[in-house]
Length: 588
Ligand code: ADP
Image 1 (cartoon, rainbow, N blue to C red):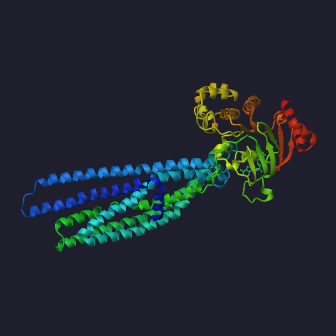
Image 2: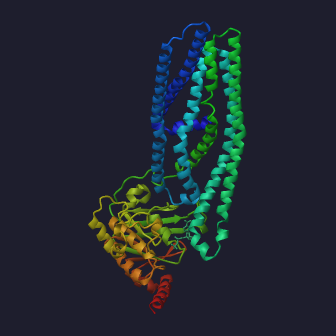
Image 3: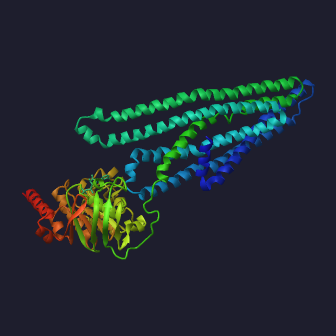
């Protein structure tokens, strides 16, 4: 528990002052609560004594009591308000800071990071984990520290009146603390399992919803939801296990405090009856005995929730331990937009990959500025990987890639990627308006600029036919558009970005001829005057390239212009024959 409290306080960073100021107001508030209780005891004792001795009750006592109680109630509200002002904002501020930081960090990690850390873990850490910290973090520290501070405040007061009762109260709290430790231990052991089950549930839910079209087409609805149902069942079981473990310890914790209250009352009555304490003090202590543990009782919840918070902090480590690709990167403006690969090796799995796990092996080539390089080769030969390495989605295992003569690892990711536009077939569009998707990453784009880019990308006409034109919201992943339309919107985005380097995947397998024709036109406009790397499939594109790289099994098998490679009579010549047959077949 103490470790987690320290973790929360450390997490507060620049907000620590606000946190501690809140504790002071909490302390003052508890005095404001205790004072009227003590005063009531004092007044009642005075009244009883007046009645017993036949004296008239001093009428000013009512005004004094009313005045004091009103002041104390107002003081309590004021201190509670000030405490809330200090504490309530901290969680929101810190989580907003962390969310922005995580967004920035995820942008700057290698894509390999998302293979090591699965989606369930990342999503849960960002959603449930951060929400727990946001809503519970400060509140639980406040419950815990504020709760014991309130107790301490009344305890000190009791020590001044009747130390025996103070010792009983202290004993009760110490015994109850042992049960709190047990709650904490039980929760610590089980919240870890619960959070793993939640991750499994998120994963299963994602898998289920993503795979629904396939599931339906195979009529396997029952089978596919099995994982999801299992995850729900296990989640329920572990949540119940936590609850059943919590209840007995919580009862014992409350019992220890209630028993101490009873003992305190008995002790103070005994002191009163044996004449060691006057009536007013007996009543004050009796009243305080009933309220002294009010702020300690809810600490059982904190003992449990602090374990959940500790687990949320642990889960955050996947972000704090993430290696940023450009931690040392500088903002560099390249002198030219030529690209070179020098003896590049790459493996997706680990740096010391064996020969057969290497996806790229000793790749060397140069792409001069303003030229077009077509990459061809069988599926799985490494074409996409080459493109991903230029954009530094991953880092090379060996060798180097340079842009303008400078190793891409020396660039900050922002300064590197500001030079590159990528248009791939698996286009992702955001669940936002078409306008926002086209203007993504650019500020102050005029209506004319946006429409010009959309026209060049051959998407203006279909956008104008949509119900709200450029303001139409296109659903998650661009779900309401066809494959070809999505690709053209992404080309418009790239045209607007106007980056000097264009990386394209020409693959048009799933696109109809009408769309293919439009996309080719759009790509031609996008590529004018740029350094272009294109994973090419159409013969027309390949033939017109300044350089063709034939990739086979992770190596550059052949390299040159179309005529040279055809003359070689090797892999490329063979590839051209097959393409010609395929294209003739398509035309026929
Ligand atoms: P191409 O674009 O030529 O079809 P890729 O570059 O996509 O080929 O893939 C090259 C090899 O790397 C293939 O064997 C593929 O299975 C493997 N590969 C691609 N992406 C990953 C990945 N994220 N993790 C592990 N292996 C991958």
